[in-house]
Length: 120
Image (cartoon, rainbow, N blue to C red; front, side):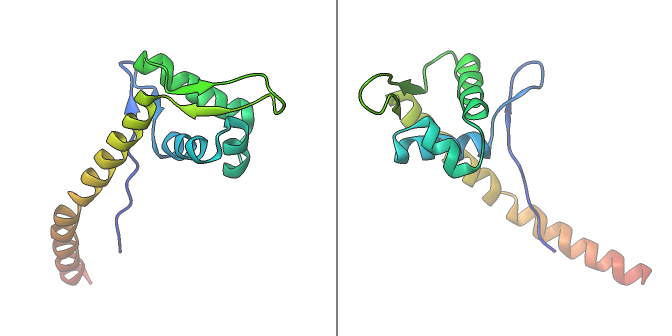
């Protein structure tokens, strides 16, 4: 048995605006240099990816992605300085939170095994 967690940042209404999917998208934008290419590599539509970024930016109130138009390719995106720092901060938060679950889960697992033995 193992434990799996999903962490989200939510607004005051409880609506999710940041989670692992948005983190993956931002990382792909950074490496691909394009929102369209990032969406394609994740298997999501461009409009979904665009809305994920727009929603995040609306919630934090700061541009996360710099969208470029024009040129021969008519596309291009990169993370803003804030966006780069934000994904580092969020990624570390997520790793730290998950690591902190190891000990409580070990205690739960031990107690659960004892409970099973008692009722088996």
